[in-house]
Length: 423
Image (cartoon, rainbow, N blue to C red; front, top):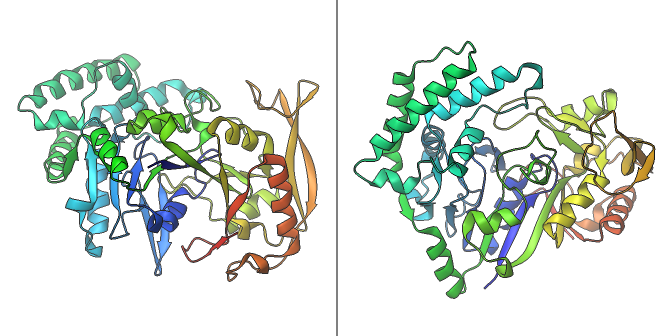
């Protein structure tokens, strides 16, 4: 049995959580493969808005198993808050939520290190969410990390103390003003660890092998977006994990030949949170309208998202490096009311017209080249069938499909799971 994969194709915030929730009815297992609580997956149904940070987005479906894979980094304190938010809904957390023993833990000192490092950068800061993600992955690759499986061992606190002491020395070396009470942070951390121990820890790669042998259907869920990938994103303004399709293999222990469909999620326009280059960013009334109508604020940080026209150069790049087989376009409803839409189809890169995504897209090197298309005025939020979509939107979709050479199978026309049109 093959594994399907769902990931974002822009700078994150594409709406992956909603689509995972919509698709979960077709799968036995939803498996998150990378990232940490810097992600915010928003789901909306029955008049309630839910924001998940670490827990997979299939958790509200009673028949699905939700697995936090080895590629994920877990903050026990944030995880506990997520569980508390889910408590009123009577979910079978013990049996339906599984955690890989190989997933790494975010320590309180990881968060402090993150803050100290960002403060030391000054104007060159990368826009970190300050959740400790980068320092945790640094310890993982530096072979110093603490994993979920470690907290089952009797001497794990000794390992914790040694690593925390090292972190405090590193924080001091940054020589920035950072006021913190580590004893209080640790008390909260160790209390959350005790609650975490009540959950089900597994050897996740073995679990997934057996599930595939048994014919179970599996959807791998990514976090952040392809343009934030540590290798292929707009480095250094990226996250600390592989957000692309390859990350599902290392983040879950799935062989490449087991991946079947790759679902790529993108917005009908482009957004970005935090620092970093953004060729199609708008600073005018159109950008303000996108942000206001689209409610473009980070689900994790609350920071306003930068908005701009759809960048097809970047999107085509993401489609190619991920091997996307199906596309899903989010927030088509937000573009209602624009007389004219623009799509970036090429870059003027240092005086040369290019259609590939170059090494450097800083604004002094790149100027977007646009194709203009007519907009539409109809309110899409109440539509339920593809045949009801305005002709201008259908032409917009056809144009994107021709350029990307991949079919757009879903068009989202609102945040609720019911506001999803299948084509």
